[in-house]
Amino acid sequence: MTGHNKEEELVEFGLQGKKILVTGGSRGIGRGIVLAAARAGADVVTCYRQEGAAVDSLALALKETGGDHHVVRADLGVTAEVDRLADECAQRFGHLDGVINSAGVISHIPFEQLAVDEWHRVLDTNLTAVYRLVQRTLPLLGEGSSVVNVGSRGAAAGIPLRAHYTATKAALIGLTRSLAKELGGRGIRVNVLAPGVIETEAMDAMPPERAQGLRDMYAGKTALGRLGTVEEVAAVALFLVSDLSSYVTGETINVDGGI
Figure 1: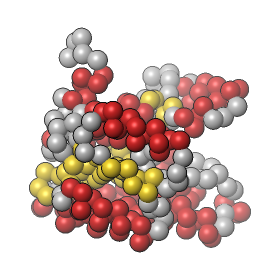
Figure 2: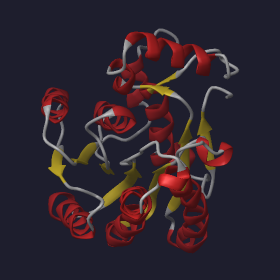
Figure 3: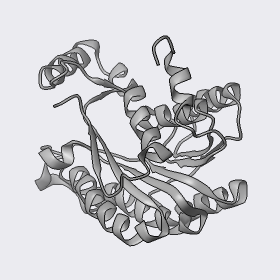
Figure 4: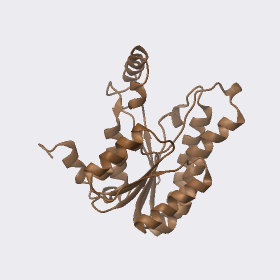
């Protein structure tokens, strides 16, 4: 593919006309996946929790890209809204070729101070929503379709002050392996994509000195000596929903620069 730019390379995933749901698409990794899938020719439904400039700019970018895309408000911590999102996909597309569970929340709290409400907020959004959304979209998924659950490299390492978050990402691995075995006979693949430390707009919102300090610290821990980009994570997500990964299921793919 010498001489091709990144947008041209993305088209080669063979996703033209495919119908894909990506949760949490207004920011960070989810946004990168949505835009990459749209550029690759897929039709995308995505969701967001709160109105804002990020949602508006995403809708504009999708409009400029072309295709049949829909940006839907849904709080995935609420089961009824998860169900409504699944119904929206059924009404808009009739079927799905891929579901990418990227939506997630996080907080940094000492375990002894972790309140029950915060525990449930993180588990409901990061784990229960995945269970419910996959369950509700199963009738839309046929042979050759793919589910990608966005986990975290931190699930294996453990992260202080994030016991609730890390628990959800570790649980996704077990859920994924069980679903891969249960759904494999129907030709449905299920995998985990586990990013390491990725450069997102969240770092831009930090004080410059703190952001640079984090970049330097984590870059020093990786084999490649740098943080990852959302485009690099998105490329692996598209690989996992494409036919290029047709014999890959039940796996956790680390995208972490060798951290």
